[in-house]
Image (cartoon, rainbow, N blue to C red; front, side, top):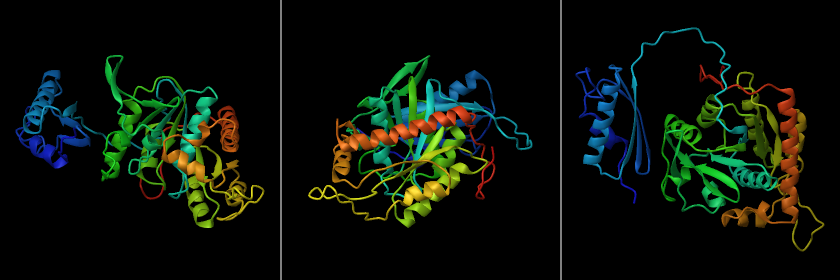
Amino acid sequence: MIIKFNKEDITKILETLTAPGEGKSLVESNSVKNIVIFGNEVNIDIVIGNPTLQAKKKVEVEIIKAIHNLIGQKVVVKVNVKPKVQTVKTPVQKTTTNKKIDGIQNIIAIASGKGGVGKSTITSNIAITLSKMGFKVGILDADVYGPSMPIMFDVVHEKPLSVTVNGRSKMKPVENYGVKILSLGFFTQPNQAVIWRGAMASKALNQMIFDAAWGELDFLILDLPPGTGDIHLSLVQAIPITGAVIVSTPQNIALADAKKGVAMFQQPNINVPVLGIIENMSYFTPEELPNNRYYIFGKDGAKNLAEDIDTAFLGEIPLVQSIREASDIGHPVALQENTPLEAVFNTITKNMLNQLVKRNKNLPETDIVKITTMSGCAAK
């Protein structure tokens, strides 16, 4: 049962509580830095002037008690209390820190400049193909405003469980078809719109990345939202992405947006290697005319783009009704043995792996990115 409350309700409660030694409420003293709500769970970041463990514990207990009294005992309250620190301005320097996730070998971002090109469908089928090859695979559904992985993997009614790892409580990803999955879709109702600013969405993603018990993975695949916005910048700031794969359809308008997606990753100050481009909905073959191909959206558009920007063309996927139907019922088409579509995704996945081997052999590990300006560029 979801208890209805919002950020304003939590803020009003925090206005009644005082930080030790401040003489003002937590809100008035600017001690409240962030409030993020997931269903019945609320995460609150607080900073206080008193650095003692006793003071921090007192604030945490008072917040939890007040929320339970005024909203309900079933609300899961997580309070992160940190001491206020004096900040000193220093020159911006390049960061060479790789904030790796223990146990994860490669992080692959599947991206598209434009929505509706089938990026999530391709992500799910590549993940399943990798799993069938014997790799340990996870998917982070980073499309926070339109999460689709719970539907595609037939786990809409599942919820991540809480497990203890090295004394810390973490989320255990939902698993199906040999693939581990975390998605904001697990924490919202199907008809519930996610109306968040970029900072809140980034906070939610960081929790699903770093507060999750992923275990040992050969691949963590990031299903990114379309475009080149806050979510993309937040992820390259948070984790070192091994490589990116761009999905497009053949028509010019999609290719123009795909080119922007490639350009974002190839910016000198972001510098995430692009492993290649996949063309979806390449052609249509009627069942009654198996030898005919109709190029509804144009021919070889993504292949030509790959040549123009000197990156690999990983393969093409035909416009086939069964791909859509399989995704809709939560049984991705790559699960079907000995079919032409299984062969298509095998080829694409093998091509991606070949590019990944070259990338890991010839290029250094990707750095996380330190964003210092939002005027169209980023700096490490």
